[in-house]
Amino acid sequence: MKRLVLFASLLLLVFACRDPYGYTIKGNKIVYNTPPRPAGQQSMLGFACDPIDTVRIGVIGLGDRGKDVPKRMAYIDHASVVALCDLYPDRVERAQKSLVKRGAPKARHEFSGEDGWKQLCELEDLDLVYLAVPWQMHTTMAVYAMEHGKHVAIEVPAATSIEECWALVNTSERTRRHCMMLENCCYDFFELTCLNMAQQGIFGEVVHVEGSYCHNLDPWWDNYQGDWRMTYNRDHHGDVYPTHGIGPVCQVLNIHRGDKMDLLVSMDSDAFRGQETCDKRYGKGVYKYANGDNTSTIIRTRKGKTILVEHAVATPRPYSRMYQLTGTKGFANKYPNKGLALGGEDLTGIDSDNLDAEKYMPDAERDSVMMAYKHPIAKEIETLARKVGGHGGMDFIMDYRLIYCLHNGLPLDEDVYDAAEWSSLVELTEVSIKHGSMPVVMPDFTRGEWDRLDGLKFATK
Image (tube, rainbow, N blue to C red; front, side):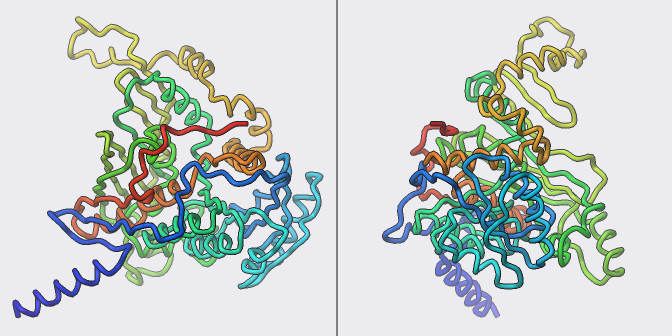
């Protein structure tokens, strides 16, 4: 029996070693492989394509998120929606009407049905494919689009497995096509301002950051075509939707631009409310609901910083993306109330029981500071962004920056390594939890080049 167990363990080890995207367990840590870069591929760090006079866009997926993409693009110079695709033809027609309503021409190409997306990707008169489809289809469609010469913008998360993350990286490197994940929360006004403040040293050395996605989805489960989102949560442990939380704080920490995420540990609660919701939806005991009511993940970076990320979509906890920065000279917090503390008050001699002494600065002073450090991009486009909308304007800023960079031949704000690193938490957190919250050594999607770039820069002409 002992020999059989040993043989089985050896087989698992051999299989893991053969899987270039798999992992082994070494010294009580889960260690993911970082496969060598295939011959002929080049890094996409700092990559810029040739300028595109008018970015010709094809939108795939015109449902809950995708229906607003043509509306926003109609307000952006040097952008033209030339192709529309959805499983259902009536959604294509609705998108056409939204273009006309805003004074833009109708898209020249219309596709629907199961394979319409492939026909769109194969068009010759197209520069950018914009994907707003269920998570499980993101990588397949993105890879196909890049292989047909198109740049790609993908809704979040860009991938749901480590193998898919590497597929995005390898295809982007091989085809020399941009692959941007559409992490709109990086473009919210508070986050942009705090990023600018951090880059100017206002917080000192940022040592700890927090981000989350806490959003009770009870009113929205029915919005997801074919029940795909509930099904995914039902079947998976871990932080299945990490990028709203991790994206903005990774930018502050210059992840793969001078630092890297090294070690991850994840833990979840049982699915108390999640199971109740599942039982009401499908019948009591039909499914065992996997995703914990709360998932907490802590990450340590190579330079000794820490990141806390949380996911909670089943409980009545008020909406929060947490967003917190802790530095040696200051602190910023967005939820539940916006606050800044910049260490200006002398606490010497204050009674140790007087916990109120450590205060946020007054609201008026906070607002004055944030106005003074408003990010240049927000200054440039804020009025139009708030008018057009999209989560208060951040969706519009995201689209505006994407088109601006493509039009001017500049590196994108978010590259394929961001897409892979931030999305990798989907699998990594689940694997950590399944191994009793064992630490995970994270793969390096830059293949050792994480410190080649000196900090995050939003390129301008």
